Image (tube, rainbow, N blue to C red):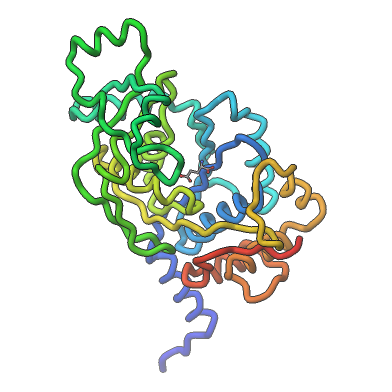
Amino acid sequence: MTAQRGVWYTLFDMTQAKCDLNKNAVGRFAPTPSGNMHLGNVLCALLAYLSAKSKGGKFLIRIEDLDALRCPKSSAYKILDDLAVLGIISDETPLFQSERTAKYAEAEERLREKGLLYPCFCTRKELHAAHAPRLSDGGVVYGGACRNLTAAQIEEKLKTQKPCVRIQVAEKTLSFTDGLCGEISQDLLTECGDFIIKRSDGVYAYQLAVTVDDGECGVTEVVRGNDLLSSTPRQLFLFDELGFARPQYYHIPLVCDAHGRKLSKSEGDTFGDLLHRKPPEAILGALAFAAGILPENRAASLRELTERFDWALVHKDRILLPEL
Ligand code: GLU
């Protein structure tokens, strides 16, 4: 006689199969603590958490406080505390970029050994006066004025100017498939240009730090706002040059309030206030509903949302928060 396996066993089997499928998944949330988190940031943290956990993977939080003056430790701790109230906790001690300069310097050295770096003395005024094509993040496509300076020219300029460090991009189109936005391509030379990896004040640029951190932590999936979509080819270029495996990207759409207005960090501590007014499960449920994971706006636990989570449910165009 063969024993009949109960329903619970089948469900257990299915859950295991789902977990085993990608249990090496490593997700992360990487806030810049330059102010209070708004609900769009919290939603991003939630989706990053659910995506990694629904595969049985690991979830990390990294504090992007490269700009130490704009990013006080107190803001970083508040972000960690507020997320913890929702149960969104890093599986490892959160990294602080301000403490990882040595790692970025190592990566800079590796890129220099490959002959990819050069000092750039161009001023902001010169860059903008050059009528170069604009990048969607407000920068300009660098025309390469300092790319071929001679050693003597560099020595002369160093007497009066502090350069930033640029990386020379390859003459190629970089493509990737975003989990929400689909196929994305960027011609590195004409749409991006040689970009800065270290500022003239010695602070490493976001593009380098984020790549080194995601690469070294073995991050397999990056969930973030689609305002960073145009940065991704630069990061993929660095991933390739530094020999790290590329992660899968999910760029989430703009999150708006119930009136369709863009959220901003400066509008008081709306999330902090909400945490005092509403139980965590009501906030989680409302965020999950806004994203498309729950069909109605009701309280839900992180556990329930992890079980329900599927990227196919997540809205691709705009996320409208309900009245909270
Ligand atoms: N630190 C960035 C922000 O707060 C996010 C960077 C990333 O996720 O790659 O907008």
